[in-house]
Image 1 (cartoon, rainbow, N blue to C red):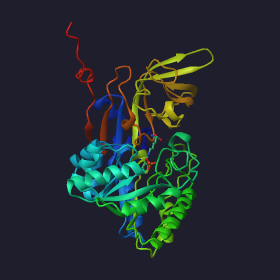
Image 2 (cartoon, rainbow, N blue to C red):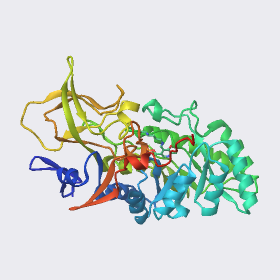
Image 3 (cartoon, rainbow, N blue to C red):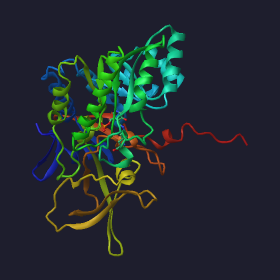
Amino acid sequence: MTSFQLKDGAWQVEELPLADIATRFGTPTYVYSRSALENALAEYQQTLAAHPAGKDGLVCFSIKSNSNLAILNLFARMGAGFDIVSGDELQRALAAGADASKIVFSGVGKSASEMHQALEADIFCFNVESAPELERLNEIAVAMGKKAPISLRVNPNVDPKTHPYISTGLKEAKFGVPHDRARALYRRATSLPGITVTGIDCHIGSQLLDPSPFTEALERLLGLIDDLAADGIALGHLDLGGGLGINYRETDRQPTVQEYLNPILDRVNGRNLKIVVEPGRRLVGNTAVLLSRIEYLKEGEGKNFCIIDAAMNDLMRPALYEAWHEIRPVAARSAAAKTYDVVGPICESGDFLGLQRPLAVEAGDLLAISSAGAYGMAMSSNYNTRPRAAEVLVDGTEAHLIRRRETVAELYANEQLLPK
Ligand code: LLP
């Protein structure tokens, strides 16, 4: 089944017309396809399972890209692990039914209580990003009478050729341990009583449409693995982070998961390393649209605005990264298209979802903003006192509300007036 399809001139998700979803749940609403979610994870799992070096592999969904419990639960049921970056994400993952022994914990700023929480849960691995973090983790583990399994996040200094805000593997980045210092830090780690060295990891950036930087990073890590072996330090797993890109524009050509993973698996074959990956965007990005209704069509000075009821608080990516999302009318009209800046009601010039888009639309029509499943709802905010959108997951002909729309009372529920 195709997850998003045109039927009789109108877009539907699986077997359900988007217009029906708007009528039932209102707008703006994130609408996910269950089959798209399952297919995206299955593509990784099947690619790993089909290769001798990937049989023991583990896919850890990066929760930061989309943390809805129903989605995490769907992936957990399929056997996925999770990549977390906070103790609160750990709690969310466990609430969604995650298996703690498949969780990796990344991030440069892990607090003592987060370490405590993750040690208590017996997670698979701490992806340690600095020397002081290693020392702190050791102290906490010793105090708890435990050993913390660790991997060092090595910064391979590889250019992922993506947007600078989402490049993480260059030596200027705040992430990871510099490649030249990793060997000494591993030696230190093996001398610490509260630490067990289990692996190595990296994450070079996000939205990579060319897989070659991944293999470049892999070479740098393999060199280090050999040096460590010479020091008597044997690693059990290699975690290559996330970062595989998706098609945002109709002209984008995303690599297949096989094109991405097979060269990696071929290269590590025979080394007895468990392969771990942390995809976020690729598992959810193209599984959802943001459904929105047009409030007004406004003619400006030499420019037309299509003012919709979704805004930068719902989907920040265009404003923050000048990211491109396809915007399609839910029902086609035969009228000639005009060029519009598609904007929200927020009082900022940066509040746009798409600029200079040809659209044949009228006020009241529905628009579907594509590729909205990753870093969409997850990065949304309440700016301008806008309750966050609803999230709906479609399964065949059925729609399930997986997060109800916020109410304005919830938005100020934690605030208090002064006593006098
Ligand atoms: N692992 C680590 C350690 C990460 O930092 C990230 C993403 C991932 C995995 C997942 O990467 P993915 O497969 O999703 O590319 N908000 C930005 C993306 C920020 C990515 C941050 N780290 C956006 O909307 O494009």
